[in-house]
Amino acid sequence: MKHYDVIVIGSGGGSKITRPAANLGKKVAIIEKGRLGGTCLNHGCIPSKMLIHPADIMTHIQEASRFDISVNPLVTVDFEKLVTRVSRTVDAESDSIPPVYEAHPNIDLYPYEGHFLSDKTLDVNGEIISGDLIFIAAGVRATIPEIPGLKDTPYLTYKEALRLTKQPKSMVVIGGGYIATELGYFFGAMGTDMTFLVRNELLSLEDDDIKAEFKKSFSKRFNIHYQTTPKHISHDGKLFHITIDLPTKQDHVITCESLLVAAGITPNSDSLRIQSAGIKTDEKGFIKVNEFLETSVSGIYAFGDILGKYLFRHSTNFEGEYLFDSVFGEETLFPEPIRYPPIPHAVFSKPQIGSVGKLERDLKADGVDYVVGLNYYKNSAMGMALLSDEGFVKLLFDSNSKKLLGAHIIGEEASNMIHMCIAYMHMGATLDDLLKTVYIHPALPELIRNAARKAHAALG
Image (tube, rainbow, N blue to C red; front, top):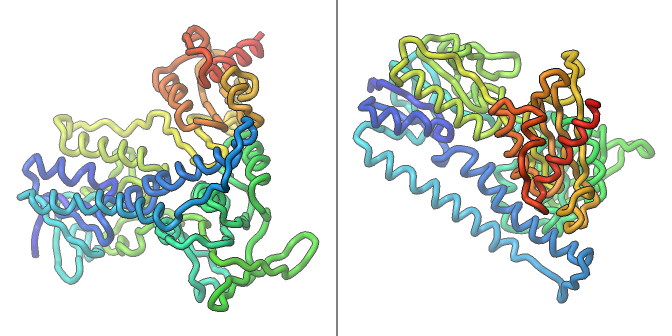
């Protein structure tokens, strides 16, 4: 049995531990059953955004007539070439990682699935290894709902959808979260006839005003059935047949070439057999950790999506960097608990969303005295240039301290614009700080200034 100073499970967020620890002279084992680089590089944020950018270009072209621009002849996309280019790019990035690990004298790569035998011992493809410290960053996978017939069909999850080289003429998406709305937007912008089956509402975790604006816009682009769960799904060798109930018709059947299941995520803790190590989870299987990201077993840490706290690569990176510093840094005897700064996120669909901080419904529930500043894109100089007919900036301030508590943007470049608000919140900025800032005219961030002015006026 090989013994290591450090065992890392998962090569995505786990990269924040593997080489840094090895560079300190620690003997490190990295366990990864899939391509190195994790979900973000291989099946998530990077390839999806490489596909969504062309979708944005296609959307701009399709809407060029709004700007008195005629596009002729009809614009087409080489779908296979596009997807192949993206896949080759991310594969090359992933393929560049193994040689680095193999060349490092302190790193052993185990390209297999592993599972716990005891608290510090794992079985990796029949080989038994143990470690003093173990870091679990094994992530999550797509949840496959229990719909009669579904498992007997060639449905897609995000992993297969991002590698689909033949563009389907029609597609049904089961789900209404960010994966569903991002990938559905991509296929729809490229010309696939899209239908969404949403159990409750689109983007349920967003601010209520953001959800309403997104629903209004997204519903203009695509067919969406709300409060809908498929009753039965079958495949005849060419087409899917999906049975649903509509308000006006029971047992309505939708046919389509392709079916994307984006109905949530499931933590990979089950495949690790963590119960053998005594590691505790919540009822959904997400690993429980304390304020130091340590599990219920001393010396075993977990971070990233498998915690179910924040499901973003940037939050995983933050946690991984914290762990490396607290476990291997100079202050290891008296480490500080993890303190999360405002964790932002974005939805790269159409319209785009950027968000950070508190939601208005959270402030209401907590009894916080707050004020709202909201300004629409169309009420700005750059918004006029963009012919904006949708989108806004919404800012939430504490009525007493005037501190910025939350910011929510929907519209063009929302994922970029939100960074001003991230910085403001990180620095504890107040409404006065936003008002005193000089903004470039005419640029979209003036929307943030205008929203701040609205909040100032509301305070009286």
